[in-house]
Image (tube, rainbow, N blue to C red; front, side, top):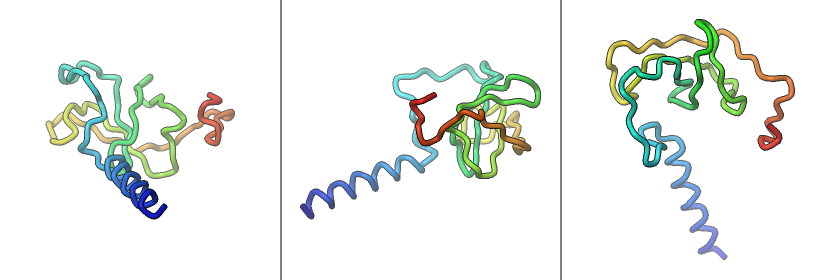
Length: 111
């Protein structure tokens, strides 16, 4: 029993290490986009990128409700390579977050 608990703890620790390391790519078999070819795609960031979003108007970003927590967020636009500063990136602090009133974070599969 102790061996299986230790193995589980080890596996969970490795998963957590992957989950919090922002330099590990999560795209599998994808292709790098041409730089700046998706101008409406944004990155939502707290201390590191947490989710993506879509710029739907000059001052509005749409993202999935499960992406929203109550950390301080910024929206990063024109970011191509997150591992280096290339120049055109813009970072804007989020002024207000609106979550759909029927969103239930206890039942993500409920939609």
